[in-house]
Figure 1 (cartoon, rainbow, N blue to C red):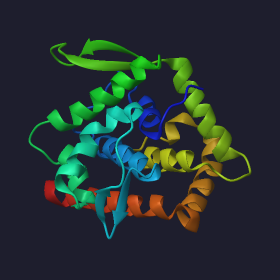
Figure 2 (cartoon, helix red, strand yellow; figure 1 turned 180 degrees about the vertical axis):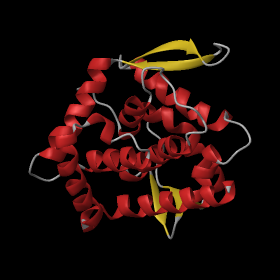
Figure 3 (cartoon, rainbow, N blue to C red; figure 1 turned 90 degrees about the horizontal axis):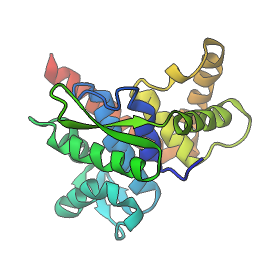
Length: 216
């Protein structure tokens, strides 16, 4: 498998055959920006203290696709976790999320994991069609870790949690496998080793509820 980050793997898994997702699919929008935040947190580039984010180190060149998130934190730090996610999801335009999606999408194109095409209603937007073999490799890697005994890697825990939140995880597994997957997900949620993932998961739940309440 190509060396893909959590954010790159997440986007590859949710793009679908059309190479995009709609901005009204709020779960996917929130989880893409959260994937970027989690990646920065897990790599020690930013830190989370009392629900507020601050920069710890410079953004590496190889992670330039996360520059919009990183720069927002730099400008607003210390900034609440929810403010960063709201910047991409609770706005009057889709400019912010499109900037992030295009940056991550281009990084997938550069790695040979997706092909850029033109799409959308008027055919003027970039869409990123996943390479089926690369997507299958990511899915098989998730399957291998979730369905086999042994400790899960940090990246797989994060990716699994994000795909579950966005509603995309179970479409990659058979009915027979889903029972085992749900049991494994329960272990992930209850494990004290996944404290960071649990915190972020709680923040996403809170934001989802806020969005639902605001929309009703």
